[in-house]
Amino acid sequence: MRAQSTPFSPVSPGALYPGVDELERQARALVAAAPGVLRLRAVGESRAGRPLWLLSAGHGDRQILTVAGAHANEPVGGASVLRLARLFARRPAHPQLLGCTWHFLLCLDPDGGHLAQGWQPEEPKPSLEACHRSFYRPEFSCQPESMPAPGERRELLPESAALVRLLDELQPVAQFTLHGIEFGGAFLMLTRAVPGVVDAFRRTAAQLRVPLTHHPLDGLDWRPEPPGVLLLPADRGAGERDQSGFVAESTWLYPRRYGTLTALVETPAWSVPAVSDPRPAADPAAETARVSGVLLDRARELAAVFDECELAAVPEESVPLRDAARELVEVAPSIAETWAMQEVIGHRGHFATLGVSARRIPLRAAAMMRRALVRVDAGGADVLGGLVREWCGELGKAYELRWVPVAVQTGLQLRTVLDTARLVCA
Image 1 (tube, rainbow, N blue to C red):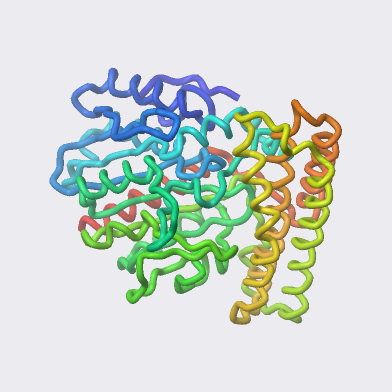
Image 2: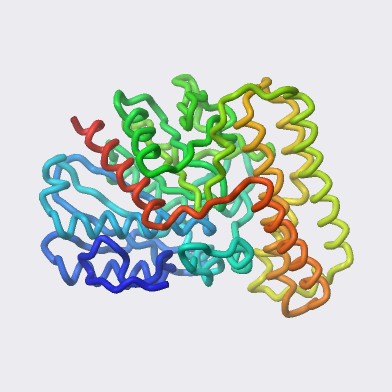
């Protein structure tokens, strides 16, 4: 579905989810249309040599940075930054009123973005199965917002290094990182409390009818402030711990040395109303065991399929898909163990969130391995395609998935970052 518009229009003149090249094309068109307002420069290169583009608006002393495309499977961030840049092109006084220069990193992981692009939602009722035909999310160690932990034997990704240099250069008052999820609820993560920000976020979500994840699973060591908010404890170090046990330094926490607020804004493509349910669950221990069983059963099923497939024959360009799929299957037991060891959270929304995650992880793995095998093992790819189809259908029936229009997805992110910037700069 393509919208007709000019460069200044509030809606995208191209794809609903612009790909990496489309992001650059639209950014250049905006700069050409508003040369005194917007400017574009490269601030680094990806592992494959693709440029990392920074679009900037305004000339104020305060610096604000918005990061999109940190995860390849989350294209909504790119759509949101273009929408905000179009707003500033039409209303140049906006950043001036805040006394700020606002910067947009169009795509932090352009290599991953290239591998993930290919699907565009056909609104009003896109296909979840079609979405997963192009799915890609890199291995944990290849995600550029994660940096090597002290003593870890891996090099800093060039994309991570570029973002760190940019944070050192700008020393922003706020860093916004825009994320999406295939299905679930919206939530906000803040590295410190700012009066008014949480209320504004919840009000926007309610107005747009996007359910909040009552207790998000992200940020294991962050403090939950239900509904839909995680706050970083003041005594936290620079490391981030994933449900799988993966530990890394984080570009979210890096700029705390400059007094920067980092705000992560997550919005779903398909909403799951059940994740917002605050009512008590009847038997939390049994619910945890049930959802863990779903995850482990499907991971074992996938492992058995993988064992029968020609994984060694996967072409070089598809190796990232194969390796990311393998990793998800391998970490499933660690994730289930983390869920079992968590402090008891007794509301229904939490178990809906766990249930959705227990299905999302194997679905992602099956989708990526199907893509990796499609040219070298048609039989294996067909088996995995059947699992993707089956699991997508089961998800829709079990959780009443509802498509969130892209205009609403970007609207939630746009209004949240504008409200937060106004309160930070007040």
